[in-house]
Image (cartoon, rainbow, N blue to C red):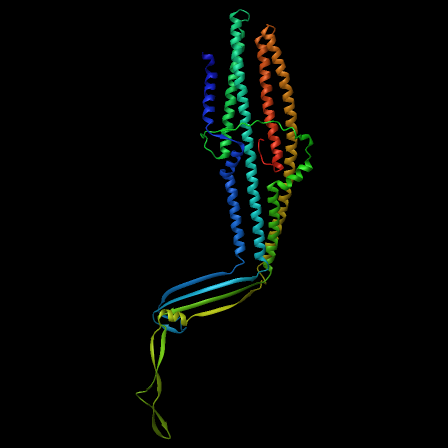
Length: 479
């Protein structure tokens, strides 16, 4: 019984694992959607889009007037100027003033226009970057999904090999008991069974690592229970990598790949940057206006009573050698503090005008700004060229990999067919005593290797075809 403990234990663990995983079955489409909704990298890209959209809104708002209000209050001491009468006074004064100011840009050399256009191109570039991040994530999820499917198939093959080795061991024991086979044959079969059990554990570990990789892409906890949907995957017969043409795929990819669009948008943004820098050479014209009023505790109201008061003491004036008393008459006036709101109304003032600012010399800043903008344009052009060249290289590599994967799969299928026939023939010979257990084990090992090679080649070929679909802008599915 000790001989079967590892196989039995791994088998029980696998059954337990598959039963718990069946609680949540995920399709490839669900995995991709969930990853896009929850992946941190995608969220960061979406946050960058929101930032550029806010910058675009701010640039557009520059076209509208700006309005501001100010209110201040305080107390003055000593020799100061009364803010309502503009007279010097030497006493304590409480004051309050308020104003409303507005201004609007009429002409600034097209700076606002170019700022808005540049912000719009930056927004489009950020959106294309976010789309590229999403597409790349979808491709990575598909790769992880296919690797799990491959690991599950390899695990199933490993389990079948363990079962076959167990049956072979049982048959060998019967032959040994009947005296038809030497007792030493048991050791060969037991060694094969141990290798098969080890392969089963290795396949199970690969499967667990595949799920861990997928969970990390989905931002799921490592202990989250899940299993994936296992669709019927057929090798696509209508897609022959040998017929793929680099120029044709490249031209299609130029219109579908968001990283190319992002590079184009950044070039257009750089063009607007040059125009924006040149706009600083032009004059700016703006309109302004303001409303203001103030209050002072020393402001007085003078109200005539309508009566005339005579001086109590005359002024003596000499006329023709005679002193003549002269009396002065003045209207009677009531002096009183002016209330707060009447004072604001009385001190209410308005102003408006036009401001013209003409740049004459700015320490060379405008010239340097234009040069920097031109260098940025050159840099963005080189980056655009680099993106396109990298895309061409990637497509060329993808075509070569797809062709190689197809040839590898065909060779693996041919090898599997040959090893299947060889194993069948060796099994027949072994049954009649024409081959020993070592020969049968060797044939079985060769068949196992061929099965694994075909499984690997099949999924590698499928993934290579999905990469071609990725460059063509075709949604990634397993249909």
